[in-house]
Length: 170
Image (tube, helix red, strand yellow):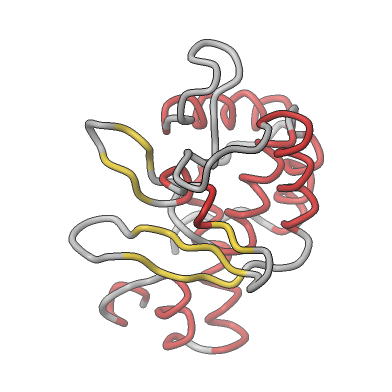
């Protein structure tokens, strides 16, 4: 079995995050099981980090995530606890922007530019160390996958995770 984040660890990490952006990102990973992805010219715009502001739709309670590889995009429901955290991130740290602007931006070096995979992973490593655990962004995906399989079955997990084949989910 792949390693996954245990629920109590996820809650501790989210609570200990040093910014509303990181708290919102971790909540989104925890609640949707989507890949972290990237927003770069080299690696493309996919996953949670590849989102633009227009991809987050509070009215429908869902987000649009561009999938890795050749497939297009995936609309994913998001739990209600994410939206207030995202609103605080916008209000306190990011500010409003145009719908086509990147949803997640850097604060220090590169302020205002899209948050990259490397920058997020560095922040997550620092946070994990501070909390006393070892966690990667992909472990959130495994946690949600296992929870869905346990409750709703393999086919529902396949759809939620955006896998083309159920064998990938299994």
